[in-house]
Amino acid sequence: MSVHVSHAIILRTWEFKEADLIVSFFTRDRGRLKGVARGARKSRKRFMNCLDLFSLANLEYELKRGRDLCFLHSGKLVQGFEGIRSDFSSLSLASYMVELTEILFPLGVASRRAFQLLKGSFDELEGDESIEKMRLIFEAKAMALGGYGISLDKCCRCGRAYAGEGRAVFDRSRGAISCLRCKQESALAPVLSPASVKALRMIQAMPWAGAREVGLDPEALMELKGVLKLHIDYRIGRRLKTTAFLE
Ligand SMILES: [Zn+2]
Image (cartoon, rainbow, N blue to C red; front, side, top):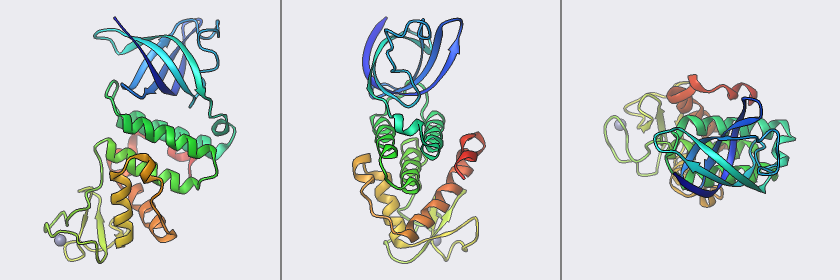
């Protein structure tokens, strides 16, 4: 048995048996975990308000060897993010972020950057940052951290290095850029301006705090939005349910 204490974001909860809750949460130290909070629906003392959706809590949990489900001992609320739950568009985007997180990050695989991304995005969702920009940065970073970053260094077909000048074409089957000589622009292969490629490269590579500062003009925002939609649809689209609420 091993007991741990960690900051964690509550991703999802299910009622279980008479008084228990199953909780899916993302910890700062051990990635995404799932646990059972015994009696959480009856006695609120051990988990005072800290198992609400999207909350950041300091959780004490016990891992069991060879089992997916851990035991939640207690928790303390750190940040409630009530603003997200009371606004429909923030709620929809947060639900989408949670779903993408659950698909991209397997249970028990630590990713401090993914934790920072989720927490940072929820912070922004409570403020007045543009929802569109938040979504884009989250998508690009989550995909990159989950192993599906878009490859931007060279043409994926002829191998010519991309020097940061001229337009490139997004090649969704390769998850990469291609030069205009190798691939024609089309609805499924949209072009990216040098500014868009540069911004995407920085967003993918930088930790959350730096990525959120990357400047995106309306043109880059529009181009990257389209490219990320194609990229996510192609890689994991079938598995996403929450996108319907975002459009
Ligand atoms: Zn080429």
